[in-house]
Image (cartoon, rainbow, N blue to C red; front, side, top):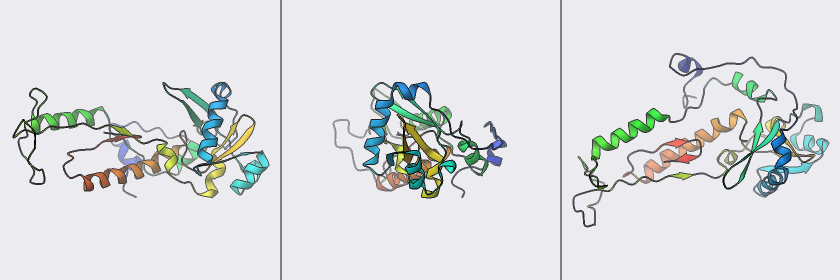
Length: 237
């Protein structure tokens, strides 16, 4: 509690909050993209099963047994896929099954992420504190923890921007077994149990966001020379 702002706090800000009334949960058919990229999705689930992220392929009865529930209590969201430059990204729609609405109705807080305004602020901070001149930055102050720069531009300090991303970010958080039944996927007539956070399920970003925030604080502790860090979903700057 207290990591993210509450919905009531956000309602008092400029952020638009839309609450939906919970509806009955239901199993859903997949999107056409799931049929088109079925082999790619299946390949991803097979690879992730070796990492303990998924379990399958199963029949409906076997999948329910894995989840510790009856077949009628097992909810399948709508599988889809998005074609990207270098891969096919499986997308699981838990909104259409009613699962996301159920999650949000029981959540008092909401995850936030850096916006364009935050990026502008960070850029302005850098300019105010360093200034720009021929790609070499002149610091207006130099923390004692910084060592004297050992390059030809004596007395100047280079500011470097590093961008990275975390692979399978949402999949790095385990889900309790009692909740597996809410995110079962159907891939090519077989059932796969998602045992970790799943892209398209409302809880995935909330828990990954907590892990990402922990990573951020660890990075600040390990590298005190770093002025600021931003995390947007799975991208770290």
